[in-house]
Length: 323
Image (cartoon, one colour):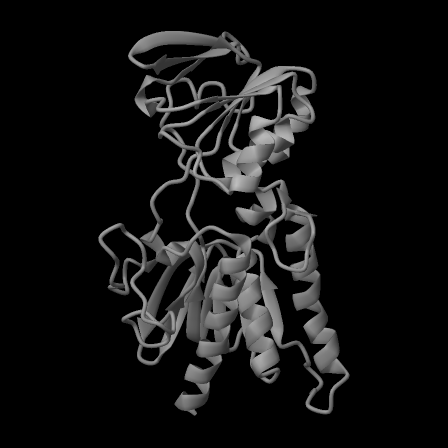
């Protein structure tokens, strides 16, 4: 299967992409599907406790991704036991390689990774929105020396310490709530006038005595400092220069969508830089679909799951019309 053209390629194996794979397989278990990327590099895998998924009281992001990976992998075993199975029964192949480019030749897509070229009849892009890095003074110099881009990944290393987290939204809110369990004090530096998170998360944060919120902090005023490790951060608050002594700085900012791997396709985008899609998540390129935050969808787990599932269904319907 690995050297043959597959029916559907899913580029971006996070919550959205894996949901698309589940939907596509359930819709038609005869399809061959390739999933590109590393699931545990996804934004969901780096989140802390997720509490806004219907039917799931609480789950850690990385555990949720693990369950989805196991579910997708189980489909091959399920197919092997069915009457449709051939000697080579694998229908879903996970390729843990990052995609560098996607082009279209005739009626098929060519997907280039670090190790070769794969072909597909249709493609779902669900790579999400990347982290914004290399933007704060001192960030690169002190990376892995107290500067981190994942509070959930590294927060426990700073047990009993003072830390700060930079950004806004539910990811930052969950990061702050995770850090409060380990750190003596958590300061949240927010670039806008509100945290922009769920009210439930905000209430928890406001009731946490070791979390401090600071609003309207200009990103260009921030400077992480320290000789060999992080010693503190400088910032501007209401026009006044300030300095905060901390042992770690967690930078949880989001960049604009990275569409460089689609440069050769001529994909239409919105004014904000997201992939333009219709009501079926179809792009202007025949056979190319987009799902999740890369097309501007709201960054809520349940919404991203649904958007991925919906896209998987429409991709299968597209393939059936091609036959």
